[in-house]
Length: 457
Image (tube, rainbow, N blue to C red):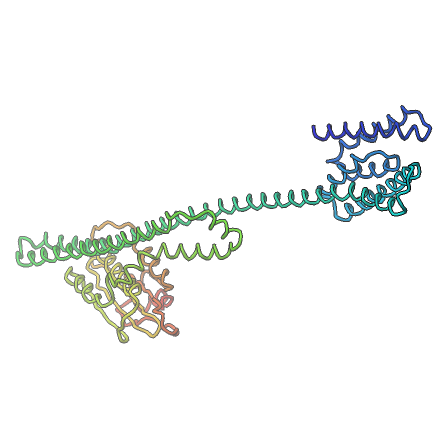
């Protein structure tokens, strides 16, 4: 509607000026009016063809027509996406044409006037009028075009930031889901480590208690006391673990539920995407390791110093276990101590479950940059039968996860002698040293099973 209205005004102006031009040129007035209507109506194409509109206005300028078309055409051209060279060239042509026409008409008017304004009057008036008809629409169009491009750039940036915010929100949801999954896995692993060993020993002692209850009441009483002690130990460890998990839940809740200001997220997305990703990765590590690190810093949980008690409990349950230690024992990081203890504990639990009556050997080697554990058992004295204890099949998986999380190596497999061997090597953070193979002074079958043992070394 705006373009149509401007085209009607331009056509009316050009038709009026065309009639005057036809009169001066001794042409029929109808020819001038028709030419003016046709030329003035070209302004309707100003948005699609701004260059053509400006050229038409320049072409009809000598006839004294198209002043409105020239003003609107220059404004539209300057505000369009045309190149600066084209805009400058057409603006110069329009200025020159307007200057010439204004100079001629002003000179004619001065010649017919009754007074003489001086020689300076015609050039000054011509220059002022030509600049006044050309510069304002040109400058206004340049300003509007620049502002339009700025707004478009801001709109595109807002859309880009919105997409970045959406991606960051999706990534945050993925990180939260991953943290929850890791937390569930850790809880399951801790429950398995704490409960499985104690309960397995309690079941073994309960079976022995049932067997000797009538024959040897004193031995039955001792077994009953052992069952009670193990139950209390299991409850104590469960309480400690639940306390750690509660503190871990607070860490996860803070990391996954704290609201993030949109302005901060937008700034990070626009200015420092790589830094934001690095911060997100660090936050994920903090969330997943927070609860476990809390227990480690507090010094809670078992350690390598408790291996003697662990082995003694298995001996009291009827297992023949030998413990050998190489190197000088020393204190390690709490997470290394706990992982080493849990590996030996799970290995002995598996012997109770799947090889009742078998002889077992526990070896620990303290080295300069690592600590190595190996638990090996011979064939079960009861053949293929086990102790009838349930197994979820997650023991070896949990041990491998624990060892791999600390950058260690875990290897397990059967021996040629019909037994089973589990080996683990944990780095301790000391200066690196070429790892050596675990000691192999084992019963029959250990030499044949050295291939399964060497990767752990």
